Image 1 (cartoon, rainbow, N blue to C red):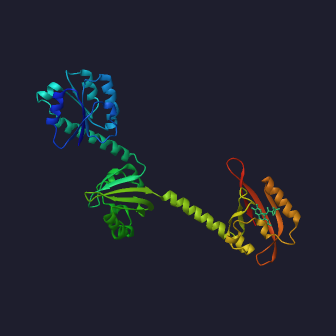
Image 2: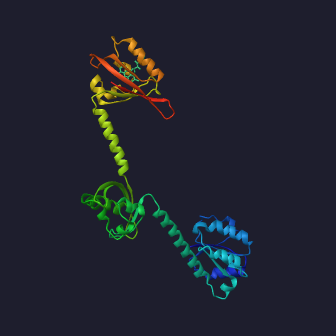
Image 3: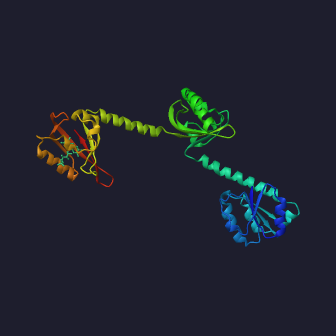
Length: 351
Ligand SMILES: Cc1cc2nc3c(=O)[nH]c(=O)nc-3n(C[C@H](O)[C@H](O)[C@H](O)COP(=O)(O)O)c2cc1C
């Protein structure tokens, strides 16, 4: 424990040296303003030889948020300082007389004020954990929940009261419990932690994907930090379904990017490959005019060119050629896609 003291009276300094536990590291400072609020200090002891307002300003600064507990020793008693200290649970007040008469003991004062401060800090930490978006749970060595925050309980459609005291196994389906035993918990025991995705169970028996991080505690227990991933997975699934629908559609679809030189294809579905005979990887990066050939009517080409240059939609028929050289009439519909600023970001072509 590091105790800083800022005291003028040499007798009081002696009292601190003799009164404090030999394990304390004592550091004398001349000025409180040099002490940082987040310094690695267990306690600060000051006397009131300073100007009272300056002393309070400095103590407010370094003890705010229960950061550093402090003890004020007054020479002659100061009601205002005593009043200020009584409103700050991490600051204790005593007098030179009380210390010298033995009524107050500096060692037990330091002990008490640091314990109070630690409790305050853990209360702050618990409040932050309680309000966190992530589900946070503390389990004992037997796997029983001893603490869960609101978010953790809600993700299982339960309340904190119904989860605390139960076993983690009641939140997972049988095959997942098996995986916890064979892979996950053994990895936690070996390396101290595990991160991954698991399938969890809501109260009504429905499963949902959960991102889970497990950390080992020194006492054999665990901390579980979890996040319900069902929305993200649902969005991904929707995207995959749309992608599949686009690929399976019996029409050709291309997206081109007019911001790139020569407006190249950036997406082509498999319907486009089926229709033209070109593999998708061989069309990406090329302008669609590679489908034109000897007998393609230049008037049709010009009308598309004008529509594309003006950022306007067009529907037309054009004489095109497949990869194997066979010609076909291609009925194309081209639509501009506009970005939020009103400029054309892509063209969508249906063939
Ligand atoms: C989205 C999109 C799809 C297109 N699809 C075809 C097509 O299937 N066949 C074709 O001959 N031209 C197609 N074009 C037209 C050509 O890419 C190009 O715009 C046209 O040949 C006129 O430009 P150019 O004079 O520079 O060749 C498409 C254009 C866009 C923007």
